Amino acid sequence: MPSKAATGRSAASRRLGYLIAIIVNGALLFLINDSPGWRSAAFLTSSTTQVIGVVNLALAVSLAANVAYLAHDARWLRALGDLATTSVGLAAALAIWQVFPFAFHGSASGWSVVVRVLVMIGIVGSCIAIVVNLVLLARAAGGAGRPSPRH
Image 1 (tube, rainbow, N blue to C red):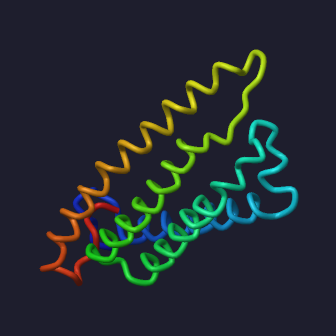
Image 2 (cartoon, rainbow, N blue to C red; image 1 turned 90 degrees about the vertical axis):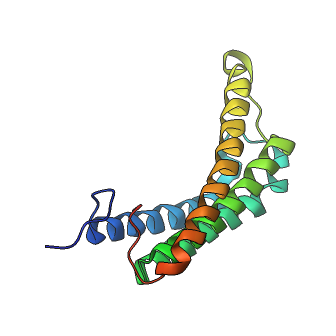
């Protein structure tokens, strides 16, 4: 029987999660960038071009991190990868906040507020996650070879 991490998830279930994340990030990169891609979403404006690069980067970094986790499921690597993905995700969220490439009209106009609130929650959550992952990375530095108890 595989050993379980502190969260109760086995190495096999963590690896399955990494594989699912790889597939989802790859699919999103394809769907966003293939023609017509993001242009087919009626609620996105032409200013989306100002944020699409950093959004693509966030998806690519997450995909790469999950490939690394799949190859080597170590606590220190997971903390480092989560720090990287969260930092790039924060950059994407900040860009989306500044540009706000969304246009909601008519009965959907209230969605602007909802999306702004969700982006702000993402920004605040990312800031907290960066601090948490810095602490986890520092703690894992002494036990680099052990599997991550988080996932």
